[in-house]
Image (cartoon, rainbow, N blue to C red; front, side, top):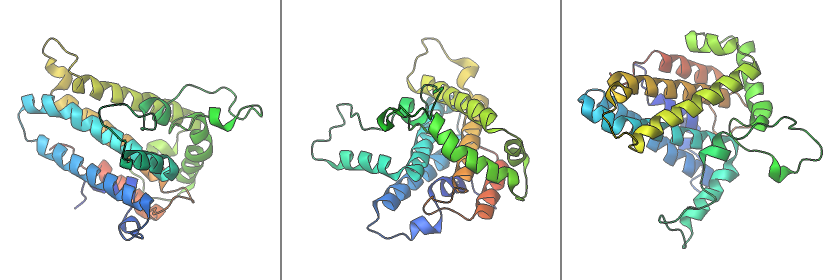
Length: 255
């Protein structure tokens, strides 16, 4: 029987990352993030049987944690140096959780960023080029290539896979950037306790379930595409990645 925790395998790697050289810092980070993702998913499954008051209290936090840890792992697979810099900063003797650190993964800049009208302008300097997961450069260099591989594949096709097979890269990047930003905003409002009146149906079980399902969908989609890129370390075989992706689609969340 398929397990929802396979999402962590799709995003962080399978046996290859588990059996990696113990001195490899990249695999060390990936394994840690994988264990966090599994823990969050298990908590969400437990939360599904809890009363609405508990779902409203913990649901947004778990949804946002799932989203943030998921995109952090994806960023690290594409750009290991980015996460190793964060790792070294956190291991430094002066690291203090009581103050902000500029090297931390940030939603604005690492996940989404301002639009770039002329990304390949020769006068642009490398330091000024966005490295965001849904930025112009990642879309052009990575996601467009992976999306083409999906379109040309003969994978067994579920509804999720059939949908992205027919998407252009422009449609994919625009929709997914908007969707992931909306998911982040929706979960954050519940975490920050912005409401001064009862939220009612805004964070009831059905709404939280939909929020988590959409988050799992977009993370699984990105995880599938990631495993189709030739340079990614510890990746799954494409057919296996597609199989896991289709299995995740059929799993009911928080039931």
